[in-house]
Image (cartoon, rainbow, N blue to C red):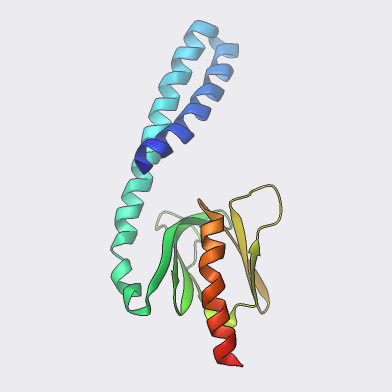
Length: 161
């Protein structure tokens, strides 16, 4: 199901945009045809890439299972794609191997000062504030991530008091 959703959400807008651009350059009949083909190809390639990445990151799950995985999903951190793991002990961002300059980010729950909805127009973004830094994550279901932090941070702050 995720494959089809990604295919549609990526391929249709890309195909429409390419159809308009190519239609202005080559004529509408030819442009729309090439736009549709480009949208189908782009949507399929992106969905395939994300499916392969999910399979790759599935292999990392056993590494975090002893800590009690609360939530994990694809995410983006500072323009770098990867996978985000929230356990009962920490938040870890594992970047895709294809990212140049992508670094693994590991934050202990006890170091988190605040988790809040992200600023700006992207409603899928949330921010994790730690001493000296703010990490801004782009995820598919921000509200689910925010809700997952609530009981964990309450336990951490009570244990630290």
